[in-house]
Image (cartoon, rainbow, N blue to C red; front, side, top):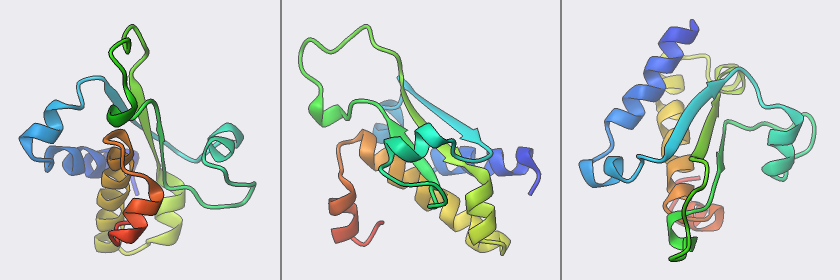
Length: 122
């Protein structure tokens, strides 16, 4: 898929967020990279060759104390190639991009992988 079209899928997923949640993303950078690098896999606790669709890097809102400030923005990275490799159908790819963006945003809001799995949103 052309990069511009993929970026549009990510932007669409963000635009669909209801206003209160969208407003809490002022200090979150959402970026798209072609594929995860070794440091991304390490951060996610994965090994070489394992699949990673997205990654949240930052301090979740639920873990911030009163002294939180003067920090770089949190970062959500969406990885284009692994998503395209797993979901070649356009409709499936669009849905999985949306799910991946929402999954990583959930981490920003303090929801763990275990809780996402329990809710059926992993």
